[in-house]
Amino acid sequence: LQLMTEVVMTQEFTKQPVEVEEARPEDAAEVFDVQRRTWLDTYPNEEAGVTYDALKLRLEGENGELIPQKVERWKQGIESTGDRRATFVVRDNGKIVGFVAPGIMSEQRRIGAIYVLPEAQGKGIGNALLKKSIEWHGRDDDIYLHVASYNQNAIDFYKRNGFVETDTKIEDDGTPPIPEIEMVLKAEQGQ
Image (tube, rainbow, N blue to C red):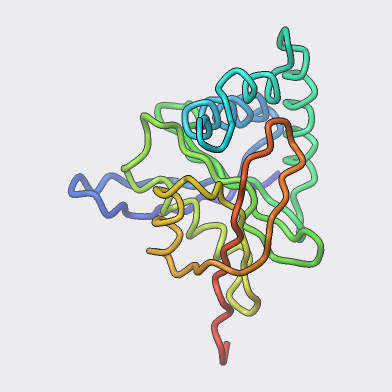
């Protein structure tokens, strides 16, 4: 697996470079841990009926029994990188602090999962990951994503990057179901 590395300058005053690289199969456990930790920090919402405990059960199972299969699922996804899916990560001191998993799902270009650990947010990592995902897709077709309807920070982040809300209703079939909206980045004309 050839690693592709891209250095993107952050919008921070520190001008620290953010390196985005292809994930490796051995990164699967860390990728899942970033997803798990970010979900537990971001998605609990009393009004939406999404509790921390229900999310933890959805992610891990009662006694952590779901963790190995979720890690294996990420490993298989990373191993199947090609023209229909990819996984890119950002590391800080060797540890994965964010990832994005763009892909083509139901013949639709999608951002897929994009998560940055809470303590690593605000450093340009999300911007670098989103940019890499958009570059991976290209701009000749619309690019879609789903975002929790109550995650205003993420919605605002995507809007700042050119995404707009669609009228499509999204049904999350997980327990607890997380209410989501769809957003789209329209294709660039004349490309």
